[in-house]
Image 1 (spheres, rainbow, N blue to C red):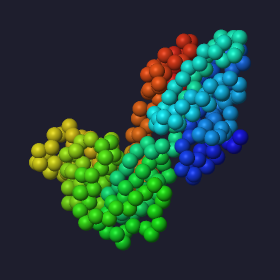
Image 2 (cartoon, rainbow, N blue to C red):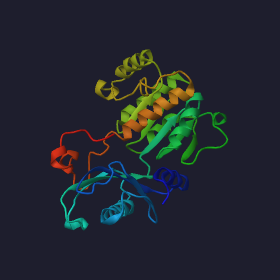
Image 3 (spheres, one colour):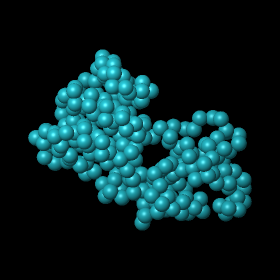
Image 4 (cartoon, helix red, strand yellow):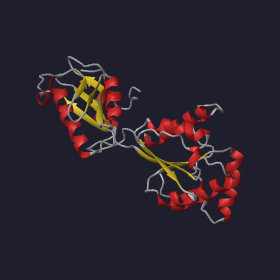
Length: 281
């Protein structure tokens, strides 16, 4: 059994989906190690959460999630006893994280310095990226897997063609084009995330112009500008790119662990004596 970290890297390199299984809580006479992990693919099992009937049942659940193409994390509580072939009481909570399926469809408008630093980062995540610019010569010769180059003299057309729920990142070389893209994206108002590169001054100027066009201030507030996590500081293109990528990750993981197949909250899945306490991070 390969280490679970190596297994995830191998599956990603092969473009194969998998499920990361983690023990969150364990209570019983022979407790397992909380935090133990294993990775399940359609044909293989990597690492272990301690073996036995629990691992067998976890494997079956993970394979069902893979077959269903599920992308949401899933929590499952097991009562130790006859159902797991044990004679003692107790409970185990497992977290199932499907990986390898696209978590986000991202459109990056602009192939400048920050765009060239950002797109490879996004491509290394479980995302699909459409990289849009009117200037074909700005794109690198080779693109990472999962990235589509789109050359269009009118990038606004591409904003109007995006599927609902897209992540939109605008960082073109032209402020007037940024404004038109912002207007097109906000007019749809069906995006999961919209970030615009720029300063607070640029945001104020854009807000004023968008209000003049009749946009609802509540819709305009959905625009992230400046975008990126404030805690990730720096002015270099790669530093800005890391900040933006971190915010994208934080956004698509915002509902992490909130739903399971039974739609039970975490507090109800944990053993009663531990309810209300924070889960280990």
